[in-house]
Amino acid sequence: MDAQMPSALKSSVENHFSLQSNTASDTAQVPLKVPFVIGVAGGTASGKTTVCNMIMSQLQNQRVVLINQEAFYHPLTAEQLQKVHDYNFDHPDAFNTELLLSCMEKLKHGQAISIPNYDFKSHRSIEAARVVNPSDVIILDGILILHDLRVREIMNMKIFVDSDSDVRLARRIRRDTVERNRNIQYVLDQYAKYVKPGFEDFIHPTKKYADVIIPRGADNDVAIDLIVQHIRTKLGQHHLCKIYSNVFVIHSTFQMRGMHTLVRNAKTTKHDFVFYADRLIRLVVEHGLGHLPFTEKQITTPTGSVYSGVVFCKSLCGVSIIRSGESMENALRACCKGIKIGKILIHREGKSGRQLIYEKLPKDIASRHVLLLDPVLATGNSAVKAISVLLSKGVPESNIIFLNLISAPEGLHAVCNKFPRLKIVTSEIDTTLNKDLHVIPGMGEFGDRYFGTGTRVTPP
Image (tube, rainbow, N blue to C red):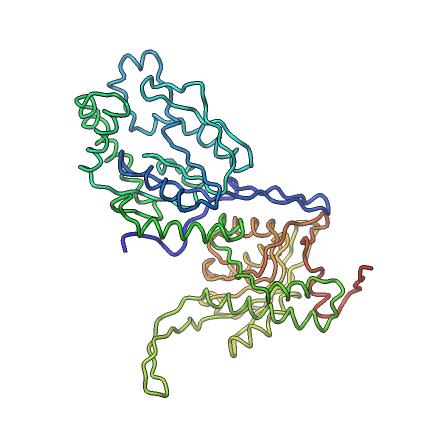
């Protein structure tokens, strides 16, 4: 297959995708819908724009906008215009990257922007600027769109269109002579002096940053279909999954939705709460186990047939954050016979402070994959402290899988920003935290409801 696509695409950092959540009141605000940003790079006349248009045509049910890097060329001064033949338009300094970043920041905060309308004949931005509204998908197209780290960090998918150099030169000659009214000798001189060296020095090296490489450009229908399929999958996910590639939300079904309805209902009895919470926990645990490393293995069935299966890693243990995390231990034992389970007790100090009170972990935990158990991820402070304890014991960050039933965005931000290499598996992401740092809509004090402790007031 021509498309080169890894299993997980890198995601952007939180400072470019901040969510507007209200933690100072009980009324939750609706977080901004984070756009899916795609960068499409490649040499001059490689077919980038055609690829972009093909992607857009297949995403007709989504709001998609195309932003071309060429709109952000620095306008030439009068002195530069006199020596325009000696100006290098294929150098990173030819673009106003700061303006591009500013426009993207506004778009992702739900603000409409005005993009310069660059005229290639006068080499200046003309007055009729283009207005761009916030969209579900933003495609950035340009020869050097993958060159700047800051621009790459705001992308959810990075594409490099790879076309033959002779084909690109022929297309450029046709474009510049027909569309930009330039003579062929000027085009050839520019190509030899700036375009070809610029490609070798600045553009081609950015190929290594691409998540997907499309050989033959727009002629590669298979690659484009794969890209569109991936985009549709990502658009169907929770917006935080677009930010953090290490967050996994179990696919929701009516069965799961029904169980959530029961465990979240304040009038549900303790017996029913425990029953349906256990069912949800079992689903989360089994989904989490699916993220363990495995090796392929062939076995012989009782019929004498050969079956090609897999064997998961056996160096595994669970660690529950006392006390709510202990509710998840039975499900883990049911799935992993004889599994060792450690415990960590964290004491809350104020709204953000956490102190380690007690820990009992397997002596060889540094050599194991760890399933960290806590049904509710709220602020993330306890989780951060518990994960720090595991790291201090020598557990590699990438060997930790954090399992919970519900997560608040604030907790996901706190954990994922500090520990980007661990994985979080949850069944639902809630809206926000209230002023008391309780998850909204949430399910109340999970430990009290599960173990039957504390005083629970039933709403009228």
